[in-house]
Length: 125
Image 1 (cartoon, rainbow, N blue to C red):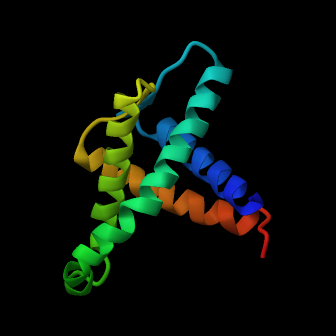
Image 2 (image 1 turned 30 degrees about the vertical axis):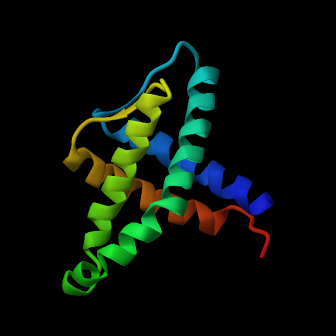
C-alpha cells in the first residue's frame, strides 16, 4: 500500500511539473487545494491507464519496439497521456492535453520526473 501511495505522489508531482512547463497541458481550478486534489485524481487515472492499457499496447507493438530500438516508447507514453486526458474529460476533470506533440513532450517530462522521484522517495523494498 505504501508503494502505491509513493508512486501516486510521484506521478502527481510529475504531472504538476509537466503542467507547469508546457502551456498546452492545462489544469484549471478555483483554488490550489482543488488543483492538488485534481492532480491526485489525474495521477490515479494515469497510473490505472499505465497499469491496464500500456502492457497491452506494448505487446501489440513489440515489433516496433525492436525496429525503433525502443524509441516507440515515446509514442506509447504520449498515447497513454492523451488517453488519460480523454478519460479526465469524460469524468469532467479539469485536465487537458492539447495535441500529440505536446503529449510526446509531456510524456517525456513525466517519465523523467517520475523516475527521478522514485529514486528519491522511500519505497517498501
